[in-house]
Length: 428
Image (tube, rainbow, N blue to C red; front, side, top):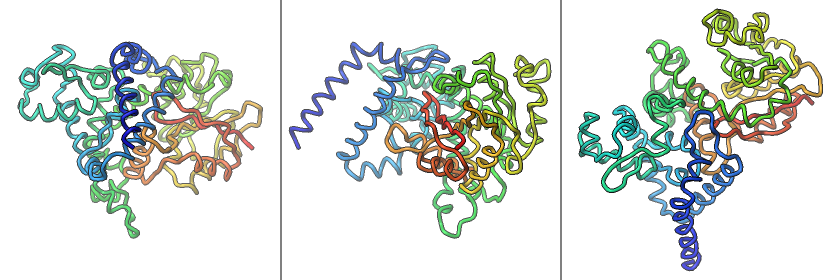
């Protein structure tokens, strides 16, 4: 045992020295580039996630059980992920870490450090209006989790904390504010919601309401914050969605986005593929809201009006009818529904699809998986349970839904820097 661990430690220490030294610039260029639209190197990212999962498995074997428990009742760290993996993941775990990060974001510490870095904790406290003793305690937690750099008694930004800048194109600071506060509160209802007699979801238990969360958010003035958060997340994930599925195969088709809401996905795809046309199928009141986005002079998608004609913006109910098309998309819709309803939706699309070699349904949803690098899919699963009585599914569950509704899964494509996968379904 001792020799195995000594050998492992020697190899890890050597690798860490190289990654922090001669390979540091390449590491940041190929994995952590902050430029808008730039994706991590695909093969290197896959290799890094394998490394993360192996290191985490070793950690689980070696770590004392009481420390594993403490991570859950104090705050789970994300250090293994910081060197190699998706730095977005570190923002979403552990109640101590959550509130420490909320404090840093509310004080705009990343923005102050961009202007004046490096700074001592006393100078940071002075510029942010904070108590230096308590700010030091907060920053000590965060920098040990890989958020901010601490060297020679001073703090500066790193590739993770830079994501939290107010004007960063990904707008991750909105996620900290929403999930670190409202969703944080809602999760307190989890223990009560899993009891056999429970009928309310965790959010309803915590807020003592039978209303759905969108209604509750609207009544409390939180819908704007919700839309800003989800909109920023969609922007941050759009490069991977475009790059890592073979959309060029259907670039000459008309894509009907089922449950397509305000049209962001269709607009993203049509702007990437000038020969593609699109349409949206959603509830009538949603379509009434969406039409001006494409068909008014100042609409955010008015440049696409000729490729998304009004007749392609169709109101209806996907439990009753689906308009015919050869290609459909559906993003973050089926996770709202349990299996029986999801199968009914998929069967209706299968009935409506026009048969051709190119025919397909591309479902953009999380695929729940095991391992450290896939933990965001499990967080997403819990968030769906907490807020909407929904769920994320693993690959076997997606295969079951497909088989029960007349589809086969051609492939599941992982999308860089994006939370959903592209689940490519073909009609049987």
